[in-house]
Image (cartoon, rainbow, N blue to C red):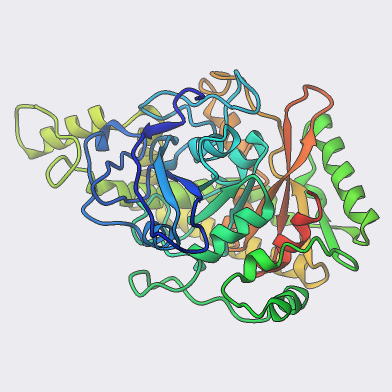
Length: 440
């Protein structure tokens, strides 16, 4: 087994029958599992055992899958390498000595190493797609509201979604079929509109099933598909990544798709806007870890403020502290309008750009990550390098849209995995799955 894929190895048996019967699933360690500790990769929650299951865990076990462990992750989902985990960094099974991406690196590595058939991760700004690309597996970031977040430990509420990993597009889609849909315990969820992809609908009618709408969409039929390639998302990408990307586009063209260039001028400011919003939400969400109600509590003298400060000093790692400080600053009196409000305005602009680009393209395509996997330890000294690496993934979360990362071969420069990202309109998962499956 590759090192540090799981934080906790524990089996949770599923139902005897169901669409996932016989399948094993790794669950990211920020998703609640009743009676099995859920650490978020943090000393703060090292001994925390939730009293309830997340909705997605209920749905997966009801569908017959067996959960085989809680997968390693960047602390509280904050990172791009799974090196900020308090439980050690995960090696990349597809590229030993390199990071598996983050923050859902353990989940992607579990699938890549064959430790689990499927996995669940969460994606706030690329945390499913980045490790999928780095580990050479498939990862889907669903439309905001398609999958319940009940039982997901919050980092950035307005941005994050739970989604699946698998070795094939169809397998990832099968897991999405199980976890998707409204949940009365999460008011942001909704049932996806019917008929978002006519060709997938035809496949469903042939089989006479509607509960496997996403898996049925993996037909590989891209004849007539219009692909928009945002020029801004190609800038700064490594040559080897670009070469693999264009090879994949040529493959789709050979199957009847056509591509044209589009522009998303707002993405120039997407990374800044994303980090202001995500860090602001994180500073608010992580205020609950005070050493009083649950989690780590410092053995400190003094008044409540002293104990609170010492608890957080001991319980949180450097990256989490950095984001809490920056988020608190962005929300503080006198700076709210200068940073947070401006970031929300930029978010609206990003959403508008995507809607415009998708009005004359069925899907948008870019490299998932502009670089191949970093070597272990390479990016820890330079947080900005890590933030900028998210340039192609964070805009999708700001726009609340679905995206998929599918393997696009390897870079000729270093032989490391490259991922292709496809972005679709809201609740256009079937279209993305259909297009992505043509690359397998």
